Picture 1: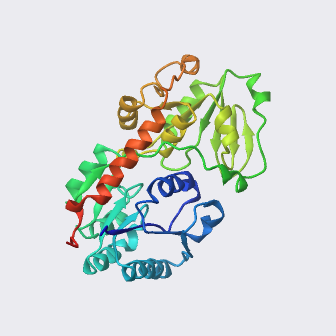
Picture 2: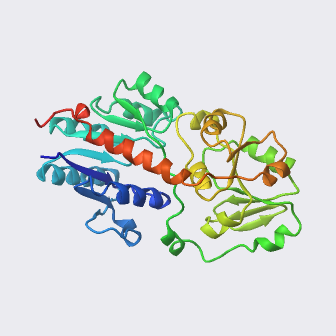
Picture 3: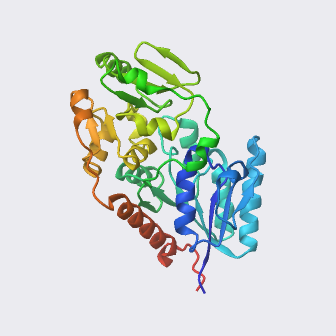
Amino acid sequence: MNTKTALVDLQSPLGHLGIINFYIKNLKKNISYIFLNKKIKPYIKEKNINFFSYKKNIFLRFLNLITVCNYLISKDVKKILFLSYEVKFFFLISYYLKYKKITFFLVEHDTLSLEKKFNFFFNKLIDRSAVRLVYTKNQYFFVKNFFLTDCYVTNHPIVKDYKDLKKIYSEKDINLNNFKKNYKGVILIPSRFNINFSHLYSFVKKNNDFIFIVLSKKIKILKNIIFIENISENIIKRVDAIYLPLKDSVYRYRVSSWIYKGVSYNKKIILDNEFTYKYEKKRFDNFIFNTIHNLENIIRNKTNIKKNFIKNYNLKLINDLKFLINNKKLERWPSG
């Protein structure tokens, strides 16, 4: 008899819709139960999904998650894959799952950081029975050094924005054709948090003959910079490249989903000469460029994606993940 497995993501950020749908589509035959945040229900087309209201109050969110776990335990689920988790209270959940003899996997996104000391403290309290899934070797060594638990490297999916996301985007759009007449190209800067502002300002100033689209809380135009509230697929398709001025101390222990989204749209990704550039350049050589190079030359480069590259990449990712989830050696309390 196969061990029942559940997939849980009660945070379910709207920006992760493409990734969430990717996992559901490719793991549904291996998963007995799926629990997601009720807010994304309109954008999930798969059937047999359980949706749960995830409250604003942290105490109520803790109770929400305990309720979901109890339901799964009552259905004889023995393994739970958490696509995201809240560091502030998950250590309590981990003790409960251990008590109930549940094997659980944690996908690490922005949860590993020495800079967020409060979160780091609570993360270290998570029971060592957790199986942590990370995206880079650096994250792997971070987990091994600080948490002393099982850890495995997986890949971040290469997926485009979920089609129905356009329903939640602002109707306001930017006519880039007017700007392309006066500038050499259009560069998208989609990150708003954990960025190196010094690198950002320097790069924009150095390349003032290009137009930059920057994610912001307000829509406005300033010299060669356009600030927009959200980034629709239409904008991604029309830009010449994506620049990510990542804060190196943070992104040493996480990945930028915009790199993988950029690859999915066959876009050039420009990075500063730091850890992320060196790591991703080895993996996506045709797509990754350094800020030290001439921007006009970068734009002229062709990103020749190999046939079936993304398909084979994602297929390997899913096969590796299925192997981990079904690996009886990782079952903390084998059912026999």
